[in-house]
Length: 394
Image (cartoon, rainbow, N blue to C red; front, top):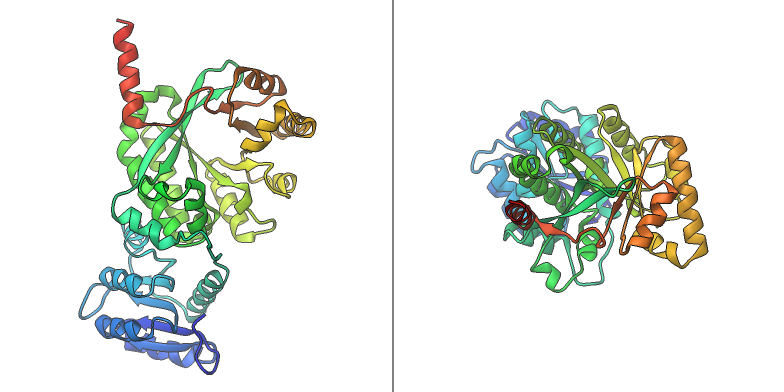
């Protein structure tokens, strides 16, 4: 945290409302040191000289010399690790997406904003910054952000199958970054940015791609146009990104595509009230949220007590152990019985052979996924394969 002599966090705030700036300085000066400007370019000049001091940047979209999005984009290049809060009189879906995509905004506050709400947003931004993990592998969130800027983002689909009759029932969409993956694994990439605003930007780009491709999903999958999407807890706890996630679900439903979200168990913290509130809101809207990699953490069973998740997807390593490890095998069989009694779906990934699939079918697993059934392929390859099959069948 960039602190000055009196240990107050430094807040750079830009707004053309001088009365608001004066009120903020007067009311919150005990807690924060405010550097305020009504001119965005002057604020950028200050930031260029003091980027190591700033803890939070707050700005309106309306500025005398440049627009707010240009200010945020430039401030992101100057101080990429500093949290950014947007003040806006218009928080439409388009504004939210632009804020997330163009400048990795961590919070959007609608005007008029109270001092109490502003203070809470600043404190949350500072707390989030102090809890960000450090990375030793050489991969940074900014590298992921640069990959998005350069268009190094692809989607592939892995088929999903009903365990009861081994019939196709949908697909999971997966992100790929070919250039970054030359040096890092995909899990490392997501781990590096999971608690950083860039994960929201990645989610927003994925949403835009899927909305554009929705008619192709429906044409290709028909009644089985069920798409699973992995989502981070950071995005679920960011109010603006949560709104996009909910609206995306509704837009896809209107296009005949059903979306299911999956959140990795390793990202879920017990008694995280923010996450629980977001998950409960999704459940109330009829949106299914599953626990991915279930069984990989120490609190797997405790998570089910919240009754906010629609089901679980068992961890790949746990499934692999079913054929050789007695304890893994017993746990999978038992958790399948628990989920059945609770009315939860239970799926398994990492299915590599027929005997494993048949064993899980007996245990009552509802859905299967893995290389035995099909490896991830691009949408174009999947469409080409269907056309080839149709041509061969006459």
